[in-house]
Length: 309
Ligand SMILES: [Zn+2]
Image 1 (cartoon, helix red, strand yellow):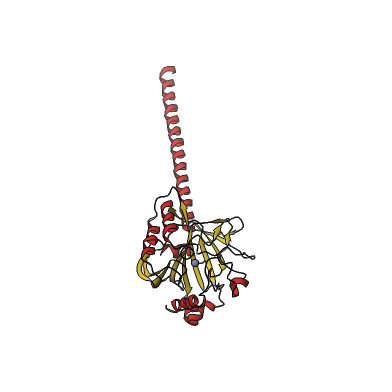
Image 2: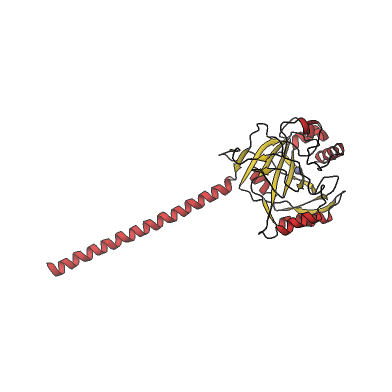
């Protein structure tokens, strides 16, 4: 599906002249300024609504089918893309009506969790195939708020952590990435998350269209202090790092938390099987005590007959 790539080029061309210098606070244009469903936002775990149901978008399964795997693409960095970006060739078909054309990373993170900003955040961008086919290059202007589904993976530095091989793939690809793009194969980061945040929002770069159904995984992918140092030392400042927009107002939107039902049912079945072993153990001990009691009772009966009859 080439419409999306074409429209992205149009978007980039139209949006020339903006930068991340003021973290988006100087984007005094259109919906970036007037929109009421802008992204990123602070994801507040205390006010978000926890759902007891599985995620209707099936984001855990969809993302698990691509995360941690290497996909080929045209890898860019610099002014044209405002950061590290992999244009997937071919696109990844999620088999649910959505197709992913590219992923890219922000350093530091765009979304915050409970007021905390992380070292980075990567976005896998997937478009509704019907909308993209119907509207062609204009599909970013679609009024459908579900035109794009973006998966966000937060990246967190942990001073005690070992190097993360998946993140090494990004660091290696960055070295050979170029403004025009270089063919490479890069691993999509896998947070292996147990829960996710879902809300309606926007693109986080001009023209900030409010057409994104956001999925941000709650647990971050962890990288080492050394890997973060590598980003700080090698990624171009204010272009490939420092390329995040400040958090926007929630304006009454609902943020929903979905749990990964597979991991929670696994832990439930673990608890269940642990309980079964406990009950079996107790039943065996009780059975043994009864058997010993009966043998003792029979012995006493025999003893009394022999010596007292
Ligand atoms: Zn992004």
